[in-house]
Image (cartoon, rainbow, N blue to C red):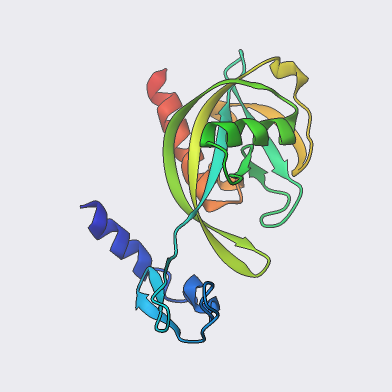
Length: 192
């Protein structure tokens, strides 16, 4: 069932060139005979190297204060500059998803994550420098020290604590975060 859903999603991206199309030379031997192997990979006809196109890991922090308000940030940079977002970002090499979400929360809000628990994941396409970067966004419920100490930093223009009933998913600029916020609101509603 999951494989069937995956193939259906891959065909929806047909209006744009496949990201593998930008790779013209084998990264191992430099050969121009770097050809399509299947919908997820390219193969070098000379040295045999196969490159699989996989999503980049990204994290999203769900932080709720003692008044049951969600911490949201306003994006300071493109893509979706000026829209709402949740703290988070790309994982660095050699860091766990938990370390990455804690680092991103600190960079964007100055808050220190004490505990984080995995919630769910949503695939995304993140436009960056003219390329569509496929990501797998991992959502974490984060408990932080001193919610009143939050301040907008790094990629965050501003931040706010918003009660769940006032959260408007359409104000979130990134599709995966918007989908996540819809799911989170349903979880919050069902919890009450």
